[in-house]
Image (cartoon, rainbow, N blue to C red):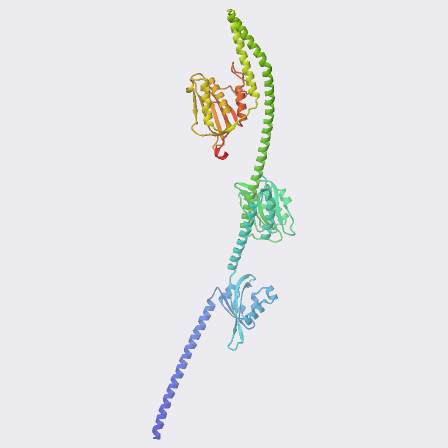
Length: 596
């Protein structure tokens, strides 16, 4: 019995040992598997850390000295692993940051807070700096003891510069918009003051030592005015620039005339052919300069530029863009200013001309008034003797008839005497009309209707000559502001003269139309088919009492000119190639829609 129990116990023990061995073997296998997975994980992590190129991954000990380093850190900072291991984190900071103990404060904050984040400047091995995005985490064991730090950073200089450039561009756009709005609102007389203000504002914004705007005269060579703003301690050269001309810059002149920007970061680097400019600018202590031409069309209005004396400066694309935009604002303002000056001069000239016209008309009115008074006096003094002579002639004629004594010579003398008396009466009547100041009844009329009316009046005087007068352009409406009756009488006189100038078989053409594309001037014209007017008489034809007719008194055309001028028109005469004379009456056209 005891032997059997012993066998059972041995068997059970053996089974227990087998189970223990199996458990130990499983644990050993699992441990080996876990160790292998850990080795692989560590290798993968090592490969990951080493192969990350965009990020620097650095492990520091508890004092902040570098313990591990990846290729990304080498690429960003320029340090190789063997030359950086064991060095303190402060190697990445500027002298100013080190003096302020910034690296130690960052480690202290990371240790206290568990993590530290910031964007800031860091230093490379070659002394250049870059803008870094930095994260530092504190590493602690299970008991909370500080083991060290894990840092990760990357170079985001390009992104930061792009953001800064965008901000700068937006600020420039706001500045340009503000400047442009100011120039739109100001009166044209204030352009100079606003340019002064803007020159200073732009110089301060760019941070240049000097900003200048020399304006050119109309000959595009000499400077008429120089706007300039200088920072503290910089001498003004405005008067010196004004004493110069574009020809003082023989090398730069070509660029200016081609409207090209002159960008010189260092005056000392100018080519030999720019020796004149180099000497001039160096005498003004200028180290860097940039100038853009300000032009309107093909005309150079002036220059706009920055200059630096204390340091050399490379002008950025944004600086150039600002110069161009503000330069365009200046050009628009200067063009507007010049146009206003020209407009004011034109208005002054017009007022002066109107004043002279008024004075001339006043003198003419005084002359006509004097002539009228003289004519009235002459008419009064002459008409009575004329009437007496006429009555005496009639009495003699009646006496001849009553005595039935007719003598041919006597009758002829009496008839000639009556004819001369009528001629004298016509001269007196013409003189009265010539000296009388017309009382005009001005109204808006259709010039076509007046021309037709004047033709009807002539046909009443000379019936049967309808076919000799041909009117043109009378189907259209031509608004004109005149004295209807006076213009009709004027045209009738000219039509009658034209009929008399040609033979009985000739035609007279008359018409109306606009004399300019913008319909600002209206022309009424009459053209005959006569022999024309001798060249020596063309300037005399409107003179009072000048006539080539045996029966004329020489006041008809003088009266026509007087009437046309009283209605603010002009009259001119010319010979037509091939024969004939052409009279033209020119009046300002009158738009009825505008008048209403």
